[in-house]
Amino acid sequence: MLDYASLAALAAVVREGSFERAAAALGVTPSAVSQRVKALEERLGTVLVVRGQPCLATATGGRLCAHAERVRLLEGEMAADLPGLAATAAPGPVTLRVAVNADSLGTWFVPAAAAFAEATGTLLDLVLDAEEHTADRLRSGEVLAAVTADPVPVQGCRTVPLGALRYVATASPAFVSRHFAAGVTAEALSRAPALRFDRRDRLQLRWAETVSGGDASGPVHWIPSTQGFIDAALAGLGWGMNPVALVEPHLRAGRLVALQPGRPLDVKLHWQHARLGAKLIDRLTRDVIAAARAGLV
Image (tube, rainbow, N blue to C red; front, side, top):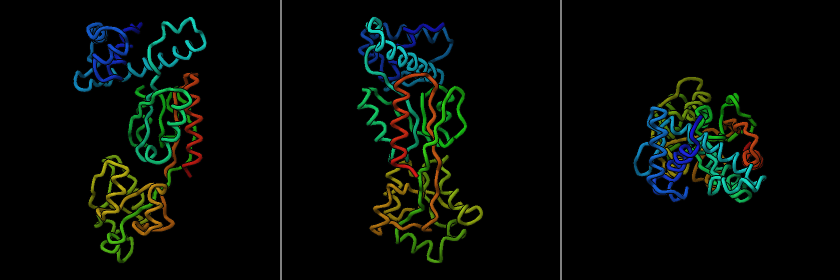
């Protein structure tokens, strides 16, 4: 069996970023926190925390932290129903760790997070990853819920379809004049610089292949920011797939143009969460579904 005092110390160190702040949160000395984490590492035979500023969990440490947060979540709800347990409950508000893709965070997800936090007082720890990979965070136990493009339920999780995030290929009028004067062809796409979020971002390639009917990969600018994508397109740095909700004002004003009007790319999203029977997870799910209905296709 795990020593839950040591597990709570580990989770506090990772959550707070240092042994000193973890000690203050738990109401013990930094030495006590250090001893508990060290004892847990020795028992399991592996390093759980990379000491630094801030302290970071290793892969194994992250899984243990997620388990600790699940236990804390369930114990907190039990203490609310059984006041006699309140004195033994972990101090401070519960923190839910959720994986979400950057474009969802930049468009429709924040209203759900705000409504949930205001209603429950719960804190959110949002982990950014591509929508094709957020489900992996659930599989590893790192998060309790995720916005994902993967419709296949992770073991022990429930899946709810949310709708689709609609993207449109956009660029500045000057960029289109320079690179697509003869139309959006495979040859033009192979020469025009594209914008990509990171090495796992394939939205531009998917759209280009759909439009051209073949491999239309070309030179790439790497822009790991949702707003940076828009700014780069406005500046004429390249063309990219942007959420319609974010670029619609620029399209109406003529600051950006669609490379092929009427040819959007819809990315279907799902909400997956651990089957905990926890009221907070259920409440967050309701708020996420409501926000998705308002912000997704």
